[in-house]
Length: 392
Image 1 (cartoon, one colour):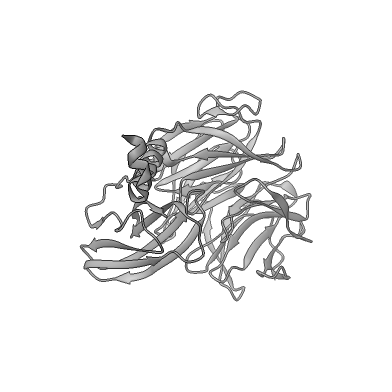
Image 2 (tube, rainbow, N blue to C red; image 1 turned 90 degrees about the horizontal axis):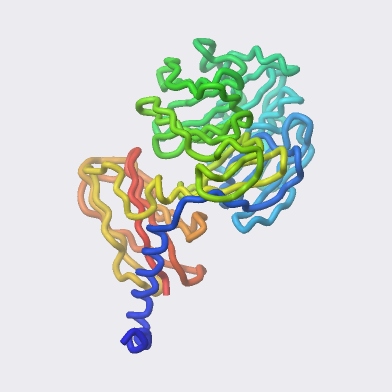
């Protein structure tokens, strides 16, 4: 009977979609090794607009390397005085904090490097907001660890002190949530500090005993790699709960299930735009590790406590060249609809704007992309729903 069903192309595609769905739902979360890079290399980590992983060399290097999601490694840019933190503006320009150079560099998409800011006191972490504001933590020059300041720059290079003191000390890690709240981590003491948009400063959690370098936010959690504890922690930004997320604490590089895998010295991390893969820099041994987040962060048609909007299954599905995606909104909201391939790389973004209440239909035209499994993610405010679709 199955053989007869497979002769019908439409039925065959439906069966394939069901198999993919079943596989994605039950797959165990594991740590895997994606790529090898030079040992004793790496400080900051970020995803590029093209979906590649960028790793900055650190205070004693002058390069940033690129790793594709297939594990291919190449030099992205060179000639930077100790690159550490990184962030992209909306035009694709890369901003890099240079610890040794006490400066920030701007790298255009064509690779042209200019000095954006200078005379800083040991710039470390860096992030660029959706509003093209650049936030930089100051660790302190010459490894002093006395930095208590977060600076904010506009794209013209004008700066102001955005946060100071109140628990911020030897600050390195910085990340941001959907509401533009900053989260800061100090190198020592294990504190996770929130700076809200009114610039109120509050310690929301402590990862006991952890040294913390670079961090990343996703889906109401801050992921915190600790090189000395050899573990990855996850901090809930709503209630401050600290969860041991991955790593047994063993001093090796063994892949495997989350709490059984081993990291040597995990010191930075990044999450792809789809939000389904966490990449971890195990820099001393020169490895890029990957963790599938789909089982915990909702790529399997999970609705994250949503009651203000609804996303329907695309139709037709499977489809050939064009399909319709229907959703409804209860309120006027900022809405984005993004298409990803099965590796989590962004393929298209048909919608990214304020939208009115009511029912909406978006036609997705699959031009110049290969057949296979894709995901579409509707983000409304700070919530999102992700569903699967199959292109013939």
